[in-house]
Image 1 (tube, rainbow, N blue to C red):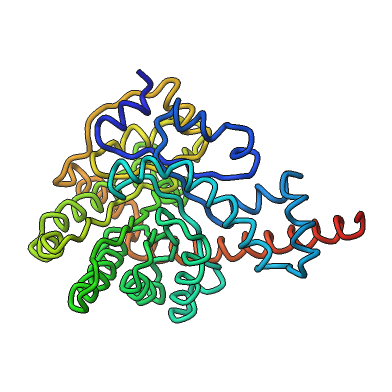
Image 2 (cartoon, rainbow, N blue to C red):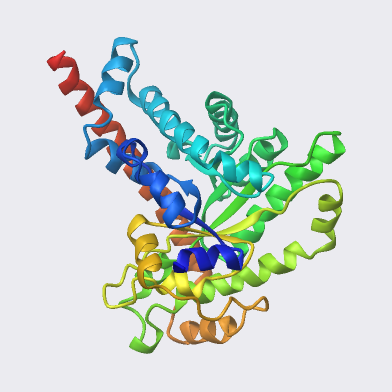
Length: 361
């Protein structure tokens, strides 16, 4: 039995953090679903930038859309929705079988809206409506401005993947935004059954401090942060507030581990996947990490519900001069800026490819 299947049997969902048209049309994603026990998929602007700029698989679709007078962002979202709708259909049997607990795919709103709550809410509703797939999550950043958009989107019945979370505090704020949206739906007499995940980014912590801490602390910060957030997650799942909405038919917002590919070439290529094994969570993995874990991974200790040694480890980082709160804020801000940069590169790639194809036609 592959280790990815063992994660599935433990109760952790294994999702793929990648999408491109070749992956869909070649049968590779279908094979991964069967061989790697995949039950979902995530995307982001960087993934689509690489997919479109490095492949000719989108050329015919771009030509057709150019003839329809489409360009730029409008053209991109049509391409993305086509890809994710196809992926959603592949995962639909999982979504049906699990009653909507699993089998999701994710599409991100434009990163340019990260600091505009109202526009983010509007975009989330429009994208979800256009895709016409019940198992499509719309990704909204858990920034200060993103939190009202998360609440409003949930209230509107739009399933949300909260992205760019880096700390326990940021996770709790996102979870509370979700709870507020559900509570408002219950008060309004609407169904509280709206899916959501909260994505905590892990490996970027270790990349940020790699040159600033002793060797004994290398590649330990991200896991400690994850353990701290997991403790808060478990406490929230069992809270009276959560249990009240579950009694009304709501579902828990699941915690998702993101950025779980190993950045340090000297570290294990399955470091974060092995360390973050825990039931009722999701791990969305880069393609290489998923294949590596299936090939030579194993499951060690399950994440402790009480956070284990996380506070002791974090105290060691504090002694080494790492300001966790300040770094969490910086990582979230840098992440938002990185997605904007990728978005700009994506728009340039589409413009350049459109120009080439227009001349050739």
